[in-house]
Length: 193
Image (cartoon, rainbow, N blue to C red):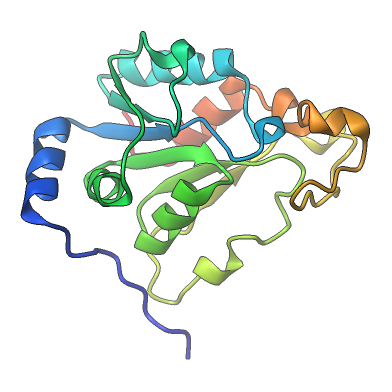
């Protein structure tokens, strides 16, 4: 039998109090626009379009990055850096977590919170398969550009082993993933009205 996962982690009281104040009973989406490998990042402008869409629907957006990023300074709620206790506390209160194939998305999947993961051509790779448990209510949702727009589909990028030298600069499949596609997927979840 598949083991049950923890869907909540006991956190220090000051952390939960802080997270309650940040969320302030508002429907909130956490966004993690950074990835360890810069080539695996999504276009900044696309993130800003998704943020604009969410905010137009009355959703509070919380952008969390590991390092300062001037592009996100203008968003209403922007945090860096942040420890895992604070991130987990916010995840447990958010209606959705949106990010790239990175640590925060794996944590969201483990905690069984609604999560949409933006991926390049590795959509069928199964990197999150270890997160699938029979008691899971919110399996991670993956979004990728259509295969006809990503001729490199199937590269199964691992570490710094790139199929082409150009892939070291920007993943073409992630670059091809349009914000409209991500917004449609967000709407399909039914979490945002």
